[in-house]
Length: 220
Image 1 (cartoon, rainbow, N blue to C red):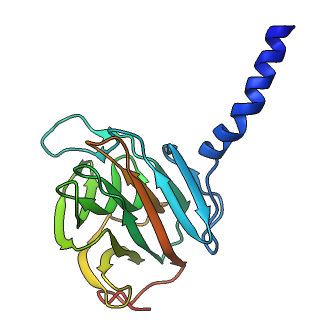
Image 2 (image 1 turned 120 degrees about the vertical axis):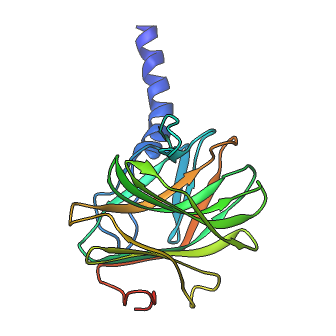
């Protein structure tokens, strides 16, 4: 009997924290039925700001060199309409090489996109995009001063556009491509720390609309 009582006391103590980690947050204006592809170490939503904390040695990459694919990053996903766009100010407390916060587009394990604000030296960040069709490519773009940048993903018909901005007003297209014919798609947010002990990515000024943007401009 004492063992049973002890178990119940431990369950009462730990289950709320465990539930917090596996329950997916709701974001105002976003589609319902969000879910975690992998749960984070911790997450929170406060005043419209989403924070995702990844654990150590977490990456999502199918190396074109033939190295084993890895898929351990926490990813919060939402069901996507046919045409949509979403954006956020992404801030990362860079500590290790490749620490990042990212916007995600996901069809299945073979077809997905990671649009990241990623550290190339463990101290500062750059615009990095990974488009995976079986194997991943890896495109490192503009370096960014400071630890924050605005990222935007838009889908118009078959086309996907990845855009970034330093002020949230003037947008620069870094990639435009297609993942093929219409298939059910999801989108969301992620944090990673491939070489480090964990990273915290903060997504603020989050926006989503189920509508197409004017191609190439990023404007509404």
